Amino acid sequence: MGISIPGKVIVFDYGEVISVTPSEADRAALAGVAGGDAEVFWPAYWRHRDALDQGTMSIREYWRGIEHEMGEQWGDATIHRLWLADFRSWLSIDHDTLQVLLDLQAGGTRMALLSNAGRDFGSYFRHGTLGDLFEQVFVSGELGTIKPSADIFEIVLTELGITAENMVFIDNKEVNVRGAEALGIAGHVYTDAADLRAYLESLAA
Image 1 (cartoon, rainbow, N blue to C red):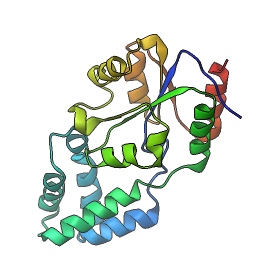
Image 2 (cartoon, one colour):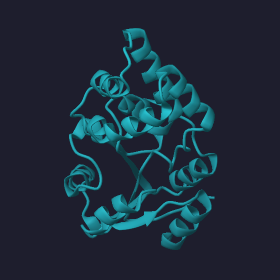
Image 3 (cartoon, one colour):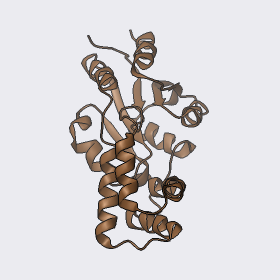
Image 4 (cartoon, helix red, strand yellow):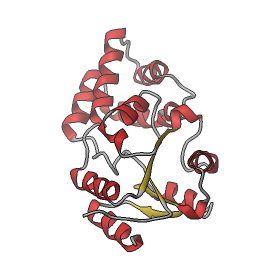
């Protein structure tokens, strides 16, 4: 059954909204490739993430920064393995959220994707099957700015050819949703697919 929300573009975050949180097995595999102290690895992993997602740091620079903090010496092969293990850990999809997206598509509702992610995710978003669902895909690493900055939302509005009142933004991070709402965009903090469905159906025609 379709969900029709005319006059609106529903803009979705990707990580931990459409995708599921990387599993403990995924995290263990990644930390295992890194070696060293996991208590040093994970803070370093997140500390440099905004620069990677903003496109001001390359993938190689990102991993070399973590390497430096850990006091490790990684060869090029290890960098490749780290990137692959990390990239793959973010690819698992929440099937219930996917069904919500498919129901929106069936209802003729316009959708777009806005993700804080490195440039390497752009191809997956656009050319994997998810790309069939979205009118446009916006990747922070390509735009040089990240959520919740006002300028990234303004780029999305301009590219979609809409005003703030025509956009609905879905993200699992409250700070990002509040950033959108500050511009007059309706926002919803994602918790699970059932809550998302109820919210969207409340907007439906």
